[in-house]
Length: 113
Length: 107
Image (cartoon, each protein chain N blue to C red):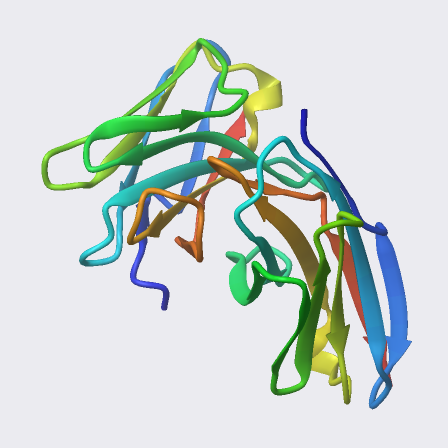
């Protein structure tokens, strides 16, 4: 158990819909990272927050947005969903703001039908 | 730009030694990481190199040459449970992962 909690574990929805994925980092960790992993693809970096502020951004689509709240939990919002958005979405956390050892949650598997 | 290359698949026999190579080109660098990921599970941290040389951690070792943009992960005394994907990742202002090497260990 990494200490990072993600909900929901599984989500099935239809094209055009909007979903919110939630992540609670390990106790004491200030950084939260979001990654997308499609079938047989690598981990694609989406976005990082550090202590409530956006720290780094990857190839995150405009339809996607995220935020980190004062209690350090984070949410990833995915809207106008398309079939290609079906993937495993991982949240990870770390103590500092620079890339280092990341602790990953178990992921949220999103299926768009 | 950033580019990380590693072989897609490798196979090995239980008890053997396997070396998984990774080459990278990144604009910045503050460390090279290896993660293990079993199918459908979360990646877990294996090793970290920031200076050139070999880091040994039990059955796993990782090597880095910053001048060559090259790293490898060495797995000794392979066990069936080592069948997994091994992800090379480079730290810049963010942690960028390669597509991973799927290792299958056979009896």
